[in-house]
Image (cartoon, rainbow, N blue to C red; front, side):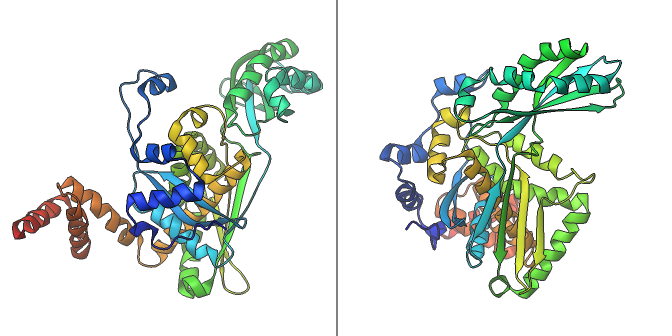
Length: 420
């Protein structure tokens, strides 16, 4: 049986790590070589976005140790920030003693909004729209026969009246099951098609027809237990205090949730998903109760273990857009071994919970800077001009002195070279 518990993975060479990932994920020689050396074809890049003049790259790392619903995963993460991959891997390792991560999710329902203005009787118009719900759903589903064929489609239509400085607005919500797609194109096309019919029904004027990234009906959840015998009773208590700080204070919650998204975004970028959409939905969801708060929850069970959980909107896809065209995104998806967007969303929730636990554990014990600065020191060493083995030596001395600065790195590098 494949296991993501790979001891000393970080100590291996890049080639050795890639060999393990290749065997775990059954990558072809070409896919493995492309991960190591490949660049996106310029013609393809020119068709992905406008005004292309070049490309940028991020390192792709592999988070190990993840066991989710009894299955082992290797998690590809594309990110420039030091310590994120290592932190997620370590958190997942510690969670294995409690059985790993357990996840669930709702159906992939996305919301598209239709804004109607200029109504003398908006509440009356709302009732008129709802009376035509079945007809409107039929028209919406005619826009995407492929989605209907695979089991998706418009499932419901809601309507609400909201007040604004421009007068009352009738806002109609289409609830659409988008299956394994992120769904933006599908729901937007349905809203566009319904606009003239809604104007006829209500006598109002339709302006916006657009999806909402606050996907409250497309939620992913994860939970885990970190044993007190593994992380220590003091750490359990420290994390609970750290969580409570984030729960009640939006200034702390903003950074707390940013840490969650460090992990989630890195996987989304590696798979060419719309990380900005997930970010927007997550932060809006964190404020759904009227104040901005933590996306995670931590408690202590009857045995004194730390139990953590997360729930957030997860509008992601495994088909369509760059997820299907970007070659490295396809390889990243193959490494994950995912079959559905639902499974993908649940993995992302587990990664977010792991990343958050790792950050809180660091904050509650040695402080966030110790691990982060040891990795950041490598970047400083490179900035100072260090090459090869010099990078590790300069970084080691910077951390030892607790002076992780470019000027000091240059001095150390000069000293090292003079000794040679």
